[in-house]
Length: 139
Length: 133
Image 1: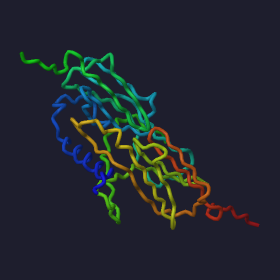
Image 2 (image 1 turned 180 degrees about the vertical axis):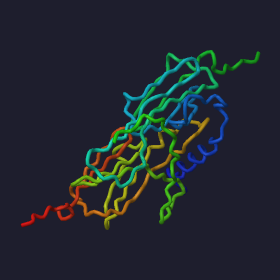
Image 3 (image 1 turned 90 degrees about the horizontal axis):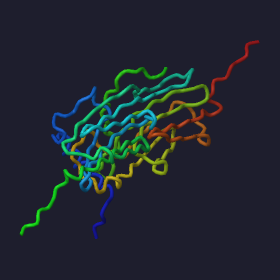
Image 4 (image 1 turned 30 degrees about the horizontal axis):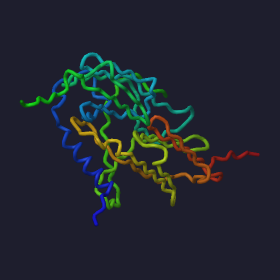
């Protein structure tokens, strides 16, 4: 019997993400200063989910704005060291970020939900009712 | 030594290249890590976004600190990718420690996807002031 292996499922998921690495779904709509935080965009049913990794950024230091189909994620990441320490290795970087993307679908700006947990910011963007595909019954 | 207000750039996630291969093909990533030393401890700060407390394993064996942090990728189950700028996977990293550590006094804290390990130096490893007569 072949067990469905969760690790194999993760591998498939990683390959799927790779395949969308060059996706032109967002077209040339990327704007704002710089590319931080890096984004993944998913479709969940009719809705759009934008996920970013922002480890070390406090919830209160993130500012998310939605206007029309444009999403702006701005904030500050603070990396602190104590006094009188000797640093062996420094790979984490702090600084400010400000990024805007324009989605190619219409979203319901009033119903956008943002969630930040364990260093992951997730934005749930419901698709505007008038933008959802409608099935046409054939008479 | 606070962070300056310079604009952040994306740090490409590094895939873990370990000496031993995993038996499963899924990729692991190397968490960005800061390490600093205070008078009585070695502090290791790792970025493990998306990992919950219960999915972190820390152990020290033969002076090697190993950290493995697993994401719950089941959260992505009904998600169809449309556009991707980074990949997701579990995190793992190991360091050879140059200090003797008191294994009983390791504390770990997870906040906003950042794991902070405080490794107390063993008593014999602490600097001792020698009085000069």
